[in-house]
Length: 356
Image 1 (cartoon, rainbow, N blue to C red):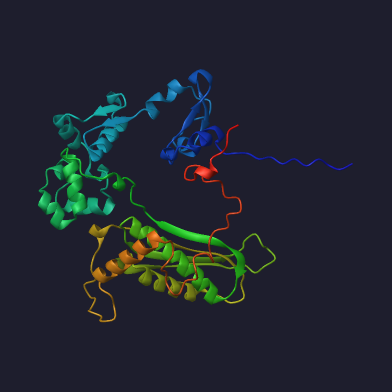
Image 2 (image 1 turned 90 degrees about the vertical axis):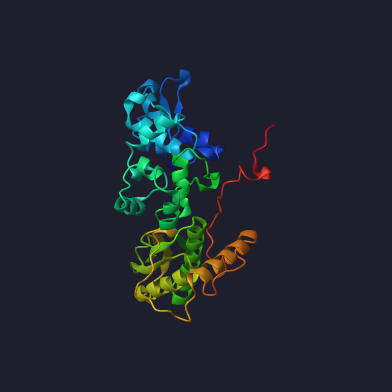
């Protein structure tokens, strides 16, 4: 008698995932689904789980956690209002900063590090100027902020003064690191093939870097064999370099990545995966020149580098992967396998499920 075989297909956070399926605006947002009569939580997204919300908890037990509102005339002030709603329980979860006097009272109590867009490095620089609260930043001379830092910080100060000047495109927070890695469809042994793959991944990561108006101060490259293929020889290595000058130039980063790859490559292994990671990311306000660097006629200036990369990105934006580094293979060579790719419900009319 043959033994039965059972196949179980399970979906993570099913009801919460269904709610988010056609709601891209809920991406990375904590979502819970309530039982009949809105009594208790029966499904939680991973973000809701991270907040410590338990399965089956009555909704009235968590209403103070899920309701936090910040109201203000600018987006930067609304972020501060939301900070106040979370920090001070007496607010009842709602802070209204439409009154200029209330704005200044709250800003006087909020550290400058809590201001939207002010990171750790920028906070340290502001502290050296005696700017330690949001109110002190708001009261700083705008020309000083623009000249010593950037127009971005000047706009932040204007927003703290109730002047709306941040476009919606500036909403995503800056990334802390960018990684691009893939498992190969077939094992790779030759160094030249690995170089093509790594060059491709660096180029993709650097595109994202420039898209966020950021610069990378550190680069890491890794390669490994298939750890699940125990019959084959195993090898796994990574190498990194801290750049003297942070950059967003694909040419510089590709060359540095290839140098790292060559230093750790070993013959005789079936490489199954490679990847790169850009870290120590910063915007232009964090850039520093090398005091000991001398002029090099063969080295492109920062201005020329930015112009070239901008042209390259603009061309590729109109026609994907029209221009790419000579050292990398064509973009289709190391593309992801997408045999089971879900239909593009939210972007393709033809992919929408039919009814009837």
